[in-house]
Length: 91
Length: 91
DNA sequence: TGAGGTTACGCCTATCGTAATAATG
DNA sequence: CATTATTACGATAGGCGTAACCTCA
Image 1 (cartoon, helix red, strand yellow):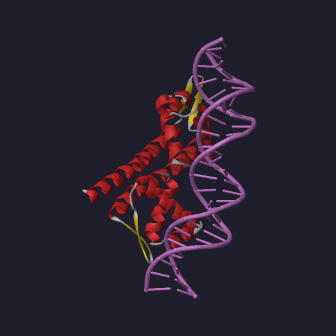
Image 2 (spheres, chains in turn brown, purple, blue, cyan; image 1 turned 180 degrees about the vertical axis):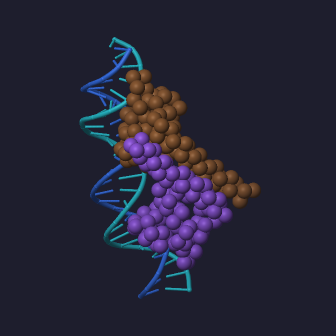
Image 3 (cartoon, helix red, strand yellow; image 1 turned 45 degrees about the vertical axis):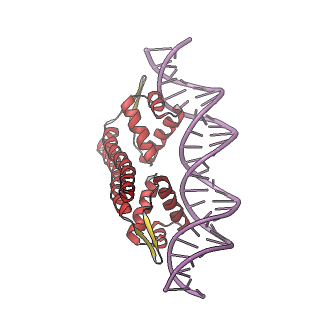
C-alpha cells in the first residue's frame, strides 16, 4: 500500500479508465493496471468494477477513495510545508 | 516520498533516536538512517538536528511531522475502511 | 571504548515499459 | 477491427541487512 497506488487509484476513478489515467499520469497502461490489481489483492477487496468501457469504483472503492484522497492531500502538504518552512528560515 | 518514510520519521521523532526507532520498527538502523537522509535530500530541508544522543526534530521537521502523521493516519484508514466495507457486503 | 549515526556494498524485491494476449462492441 | 484491460517478461531502481567506519563523551 503506497502513495503511488493511491494516486493511481484516484486518477483511474477520475478518468474512468486505466488508459486515460495512465495518460494523465504519464506512465504506461500496464503499470496502472498492475498497481490496481496489487492494491485490490492486498486489501482483499474489489475497488473497481470492470466494464467494457473502463473501470468504475465499487461502493467499497468509493469509501476507499475518500481516505486515499485525504492521504495524498496530506502527503502533498508535507512537501509544501517543508518548502515554506525552509524559506521562512532563509527569509 | 513514501508512507514508509513518514512512518520512519514519526518513529524517530517519537523515540528520539534512529536506534530506538529502528528497534520499534523491527528494521536495521541503517535503513532508518538512509530513509531519513533520502527524505531530507528530496525535500531539501533538515528535518532533524543531529545531537550526540540522538535526533531531534527541527522547527521545519515538527511542521512536517504533523502532515506526515495525517497522511499515515489516512492511509491506515483506507485499510480499515476497505475491510469494513468488505464485511458489510458479506454480512 | 561504548553508544550512537553514517557509508559501502551486495542481494532481493518491486516497478516500469514493451510486447503479446484476451475480451468486448 | 478498434479499444480497452490483462499477462508475460526482461531491465532498472529502491530498500534492506551486514559489515565497516566515524564521532563524541
